[in-house]
Structures are given as structure tokens and as C-alpha cells.
Length: 130
Image (cartoon, rainbow, N blue to C red; front, side, top):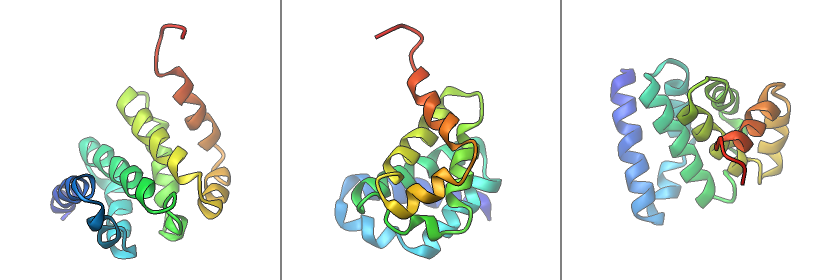
């Protein structure tokens, strides 16, 4: 069920942040496919968790090399960033900015028309000028 996958994502995120040895075990195509599914039909909290999980995994696996091969993963991260809520925009922008470090992921990101505006919204996280 989607709820079970959301709880699994929280556990995987915690494991991945706690010990880098878990990252490569977690960043498998089947796990990333489940993450993509939660990004589609999960609760709002589940979607935020999954975007954070992708960012964590990508930061530890050469910018998530090959993540673009997971069906709709990048498009769903972009869609999360299109929401008005600040947390959703932040989670999406963080994941996308890390994923963009890989050429394959970068090409997939730039193929999504709204991705540039989602990444650009990262510049507006603070209302006060720097």
C-alpha cells in the first residue's frame, strides 16, 4: 500500500542519513520506482519524504547517476516543486539541484518545461534581501 511505502521511505531516509553504507543498498531501481510511485499518489508528507530521500541518495551516489532512468521520477519531483507550499518547493529544488550534477539527470530535468521555474523558485526561499 502507499502508506506502507511512505513509512518505508522514512526508514530508508533515516538509514541513508545515518550511514553511507546503506545508500547503495537503498538506491536500487526497485526502491526508486517505489519512491516515484509515492511521489505520484502518496500523502503530502510522503511526497516530501520521498523528495528528501532522493536528494539524500543523489548526494551520496555521484549526483544520482542513472536516476533519470526511473520512470517519471524527475517529472514527479518537478511537479512537487510546482506546489505553492514552501516545504514542497524546497524539497523539490534541493533534489533537482543535486540530480542536475549528472549529465543524464540534467538532460531529463531540462526536458521538463517547468523545471527551470521550479529551480528558479529556490532563489525566493527568503522574503528578505540577502
